[in-house]
Structure formats: structure tokens, C-alpha cells
Image (cartoon, rainbow, N blue to C red; front, side, top):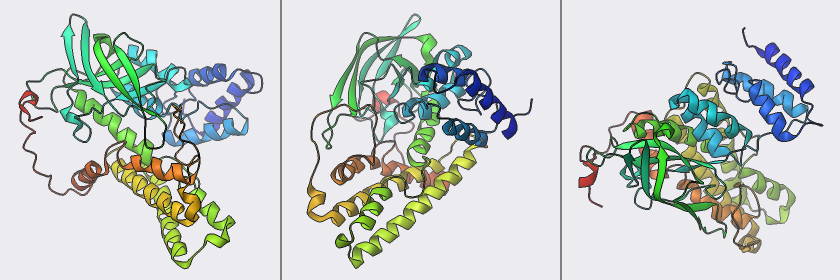
Length: 394
């Protein structure tokens, strides 16, 4: 059957009739929506989709929003939706897809990302967490850092070194790690904001069955590229209304507090407002390009713009507010379940935005990606690419 707008509206109406949002438990509704193929319509049938064009997802979303249907709290489960799911879909076995995609989408199981390490952040391929094969299991030892949502996550996408005798990019394998397994320890990592949305994760003799390996042994770097490309799009290419994101609060303050205005601040705000709108429309264009295939390196450019704009806008907001901008609402240590970049006060936005140029790939690394993979400029010399990982200087 051809899936078009009319067919999607018909199926959405059937879902709403069988599971009225007003009288159906939210989780039951989300499970029914997934089973009806209306979770992500471009996914295959049986995996939350109908094999329809990705662009038609907006039709379903609009109908369900108008009916007051519950959503799956996408900000709380963003790592699962934006990073784990597309990677599992591309590289997972049928058994893995059936096991993980439904509870991931409904939010029953939260995911985190075990990639960065204290000695392998910007140079992720230099990671040292080891996975050693023992029969049908892999025994994993190492440390990960900057892990968002690890304190609430049931599952993690994990890359570990399985062969130290080959160059660093070649000896990595990708796993799905159960965060409740023995040997997994999560410690809060308190940030400059006072919160601990990030964590350190220590892995001590953690046993992962080979059935939870994603992709071939040694292909972890290739598999991870799908995750990383989707991560950059998820961070830098999120759908926003006009004046959504960081530009919204400062524009609101400008309109409501005329006594704070100066000519210089006006000129700077106008410049950032225009840049924010250009970035928003470019992100929309990028999402439309995704309809035809997988995200490419263009997402790196969007994530670069996201980080720079957030930092410049939040800095201007603090300056606009004068003495008020130096205040901070609450330094209480807490471990939030989601990150609201525009939440709380101007001081929080200013401090939290400092992490935007680090998380999801540092701006310096992303500049290299744009230069080499988008603009086609010559690559920087890298003397360690053909050296076995065990022989690298550390």
C-alpha cells in the first residue's frame, strides 16, 4: 500500500479512536502508537514505522498534538532517539532491533553514551577502555566521562578497544551495555552550573554478551560515525520556532525592559537575531535533506553554529541585564533528568552554554570535519594514523 498523507491521517484517526488520549494511560498510548507504525513513520514496518517518507512524520505529529495525545518526552530520551536508535537500525541484528527500539521510543528505557574518556575526548579514536573476549562474553574495563543521563539510563552505547595491535581507528568494537550489570559504577560530575547532569562511569570486569555487539569486531569506528553524525544533527539541527532557543529570552527581555536598551546593545542583538534565524532555517533545510538518506558531515557545521550562537547570545544577555545578570538563582547540587538550555535564569544560560563547544564534538574538531569533508580542503598531517594503538605516546 502506498503511504501518503491521507493514509497516515486515516491510521492516526484509527489509533485515536481505539486509544482515546483522555482515557488511555500515556505509556499504553505510546506503545499502541509504536505498534501502529506511527512512532517514526520512515522506519520499517514492525519497528515503529511504515516505510513512509520521513517528511510525512509531521502529518502524524500534528494530528496527535491537536488531539492532546501524550508525547514520549523527547528531551529526556534524546540520546536514545537521536543517537542509539539510528545506529541500531543501521547495524543491529533483527533480534536487537526488536528488543531495543520499542522501549527506547516509548521512554521505558533511557539510553546514555559511553564514548569519551579522560584521555580520549577530542581524539576519541585514542580511547583505552578494553574489551577482551572470553567465550561468548566480552570483559570490559575502563573509564568514561561526560556521560549525560548515565544516572537514569538502563542502556548505553559503548565503544571499546578490542585490538591494541592495530592502528587506533581499526581496533575498536561497538557494544550495547546494560547499565545495571555488575561492575558498572556511575559517579556524578558536578559542573560549573552546580548541577551534575554529566557523570563519570567506571567499568570493572563488566561482562557483555557477544550478542550485544553492534556491527563486526573491529568495525566500531565505522559504526560510531553513524552515532556521531546523528548526534551533531540532534544537537545543532533541532526544530525550533522563530525566536526559539537562546535568542528567545533575550528578545523577551529587550521588549519588556526598555530601560536596559542602548544603541550598541541594539545593534549586537539585531546581528545575533538574524544569525539565529539563518541558523534555524538552515537546520530546517538540513532536516529536509535527511529525508533522502543518512546525515553527513554537514551536521558538524550546524553544531558549530549552535555552540557559537549560544555562547554569544548568553553573554550579551548577561551584559544587557547589568547587575542582575551577575546573579545566580540556585547552586544546589542536583542531578536533572533533562537539560533545558534556555531554562532558569540568565546566569545559568551563560554558564551552561560554555559546554556547548565541547559536548557532541569540540568546535576545533568540528572545524576540521567541515574543512576536510564539506569543503574538500587538504587534511591535516596525522602521523599516528598508521601506528598501532599500543605504540602511541600517552
